[in-house]
Amino acid sequence: MRTRDHAASGVDARSAGVEASGGRLAWADVAKGGCILLVLLWHVIMKDYLQIDWRLDLPVAGVWGTLGELLLPMRMPLFFTISGMFAASAVQRPWRAVGRPRIARFLYLYGVWLLIHTAVLALAPGFPTDRATSPGELLAQLTVTPSNLWYLYALALYFLLAKALRRVHPAVLLVGAGALSAVASVGLLDTPGNRAGLYQNLVFFLAGLHLRRYVQRWAEAVTGRRLLLAAGAYVVALAAVAATGAARVPGVAPLVSAVGVLFGIAAAVRLARWRVVGEPLAAVGRQTLPIYVIHMPVLALLHRLIADPVAGLGDSARLALAFGFPFSLTVLVLALSLGLHRVLLAVRATWLFDLPASRRTA
Image (cartoon, one colour):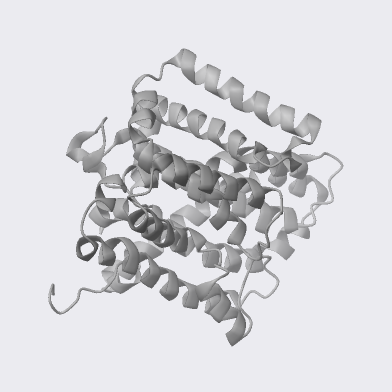
């Protein structure tokens, strides 16, 4: 299963320039691990932590919410940039060689886990997330308005578009996708559900695909000084947008995300060289698929179990718990997701994580 997890994020490590042992791109695995942890942390903060009545005089909850928002412009754009980088070689292959692993597989996984999410989330009706409550809503999530699993849907759609339009000049594609991202990020398009993310991140997938050599050059040239410069540029961009309200200007949000991607790559490269941190992050990055599809139902059930008891604690207990609660719950959700993955593989439920083999390949 582990050998397919890299493909689950659209990554083909053999096309990489800076590889770790076994042919995998070290910094990309670290970046993926960091991104999926940020996904978990964001969902923990927004869907659990900020839903609890902490009743605190200190703005602890607000600090955690702000932290999640500061990392939001970087997280998914970086994920899709990496996915696009390593989809480049596959785009050049014949349709028959990539239709099943790159398109059908992700659509299949999206459909299977959408049904699972719909069933489990019905057990936690107070959990604040998109869910289908009628056949019509379920049909919409399967087709035009993807659910919380929209990353899988996007991978299939983005690859399909990149493959179909491979003869179009990259500059045309990037300008078009950039314009789509720009108008979607300021609300000029109807974006129910998670359709906004679908519109906004195509440009980063295509940038990773068509500008791969430049991304690799940036990764290979990263130094401590360049990391600090990239971090500073990202902080300045965020501060400038917050101070001026420029987020409402079309094109600003994608530009901030582009700076965030450069910072994220630089951070991943440096962390990959720090084994005590890089190796665990890379290990998580090689298992993004099960974490991504399992964590939301796990979080929803945990929220149902713990939200009221936590809110009912005494003042001192709530104050002590509030500081590290998002981090602790993120670690718990990660551990439970990976544990459930192991159990499901042990009972041979591999069809939950991969497209079943056709009779021809069985």
